[in-house]
Image (cartoon, rainbow, N blue to C red; front, side, top):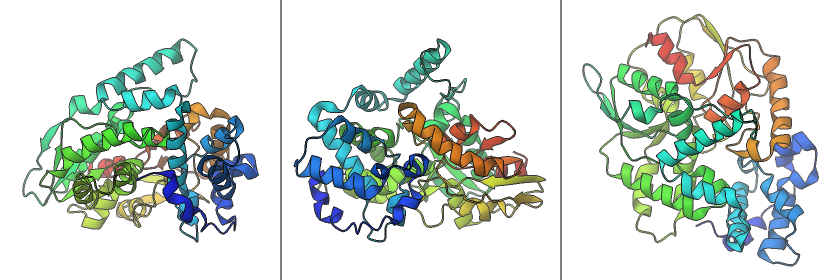
Length: 398
């Protein structure tokens, strides 16, 4: 469970090598030593764990300024789970009664998809009235769950059966991704089950330190998916995949009866392009004259193959050409809802990413993260930013 006191010995493993510094988007954007993981951990240890120093507003700002991209965790030679420690710190801050209104909203609104949609509409209205940032993604005219639910069986022999967890980004903003997922899986002989009653995966609430809200969402989703007789559980969002695979179990106590069901579900979790590449395409894609570049999502560490799956999968499309970015794995700055709360830092991080994007000529930019899709897309006007599954669907003529 994400209790800060459980991480004291783990924090001591940090060797202060600063190797993670070169991967930290907020450090690269601001060149501030306070952004380096070793210094964030020191603040957490001295002010929140030992309480040797008062927890000042500036300290709170430093803890909040982390994008939770997990790059430092992925590169740490001492295997310190830095993102988990920062989440645990935010949970403790919330328990001290200074979590703020946003934490409340995350916990209460995201537990029901209808309320999430209402929140999105309120954000769109605030944007139109000029009281919110212009860079708020527009909701789709009809959410994915209003168009798709139940079982979708392919024509011919059913090779596999999968359940589809639909993240909030796909459900409310990019239902075209969800449609492509269902069509491509069906085209390859895979039956798709989309259970009713899904809620947010919980990662936005957890990132804000709202453990109770995240736990509620985890419990709802795990109970919904654990009893399904399927070969795999698919998501199109790498952040949702990370939440199920790495964070869900940590939202509950180790002896919670639901842990067994969490283990059952997490063993079956796949990002959709990773799953298709692992299983192999039943139907070879047709020719598609297109050049594409691949922005690798930050939340990729939960699967050793997810970052290369689109390259391998789309590499099977005749005439489709990959044009790599110089730094394919550079953070875009969106980071869930981070870009709304930390606009200045987020825009600096994105500006660094855009340098590489603008120097790379291609027809389309692909990524498995819906936040990356819209946050990069706000500034890239000369080409589409979309999910790799959309290109595969296009090659199939779906």
